Length: 338
Image 1 (cartoon, rainbow, N blue to C red):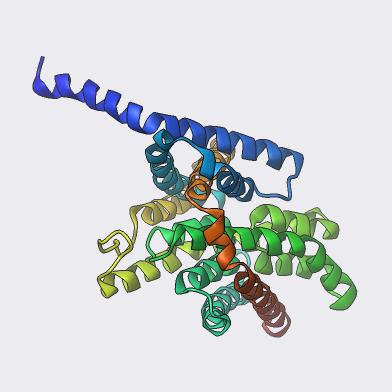
Image 2 (cartoon, rainbow, N blue to C red; image 1 turned 45 degrees about the vertical axis):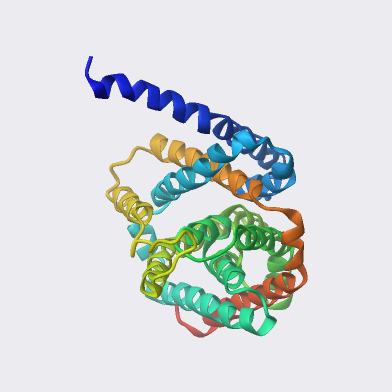
């Protein structure tokens, strides 16, 4: 027997002993989040998972720490890669140049504007970046993806996800009410506004549903088009952080993380039309479970006392960012021909 063959099983055994308990706990947390999501579909499984992690993180055994950290890092990357299968380039292009311009303006204005608002409100740069990313692009998954290249504390990430939950849930009722009774939007425009301004995909579906199935379909495509912009946003921040020469872990992040490259590869693969429908459905479910496990691991590292310190200012920033994104989206929809 060669040395490699002799050592490899031992390494596997040691790795399993060190990380196994935490991975199992993360899996249980993800399962619990999926169950809650089944009961309340408008409440994202990712959001539930991070909140469950925060709740139980302080009482989990120390033996689970390594595995939870591993699950957070690895499952996040795989989950984001699989997100690329949810949308094709053709679906994006069918929105038309006018609508694509609206999406770009909304995302870029929301991102940059929230960073400025963060300074004015007085929150940390890390929290401002997390809120800017989550509110302008795609909620919790965008936040944890950006965290992989940015200098941010786990408390900033958890606060950002919590704010996505609060304001995204409020939007489920506010967006259709304002769109229909105040702004007089037709069903298609309401679906577009929901896709542009609401944070999580599940929240978008709930917000657009009063306008009918066609509006929901439009809202989801618009929303997923915002998701596509996650790749250049993360890559751009990776470049900025790399140039700064400093990272939270003492090393320079890659310009373009490999999981972002994987996301783009999956997007291109979906665009070929060669992926069977059953595979797409399965990939979507697997992505949700993996991201939920990662979010549970993220939440478990948070300590509530630290989280509460930024609560009031974080709430103000979330409100202002929500107002900014919604206003820019509605204005762009009204002004730019589609």
